[in-house]
Length: 168
Image 1: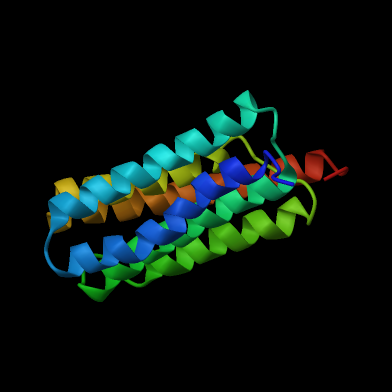
Image 2 (image 1 turned 45 degrees about the horizontal axis):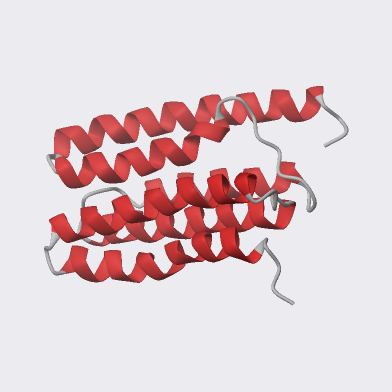
């Protein structure tokens, strides 16, 4: 029997397929195609949640699938950026740390979204777009400083939210 919850998860899974295509086009210098692929990935990020809500098939497993698909896509994009020297490898440390913090404070059943951290994925996706559109080192430096400040704010927000709500 086909479960309705597979549809939004299938849409999320598209991001796993887009990630290597992004890397391939990026390394070939096809930044416009990389941007189109990434824009489509962002569209799937919007659509999976929309479909899940419309079909009344939201689930904790689906929420984790969505977050994991975002994490893999973002990590792959920034890994490509690091390999060509666009960003310092520290960006990968920040991304992995923030994802690990999300998992550690969420528990295994229900994701915990703090008021700041829930926007971190969108911020990182925006960084990918801006990095492709404006590949100047000064722009990337500003983005990296902004990411560092965003991560610090998110860590403080998440810890405050987590300790304030001990049921999580």
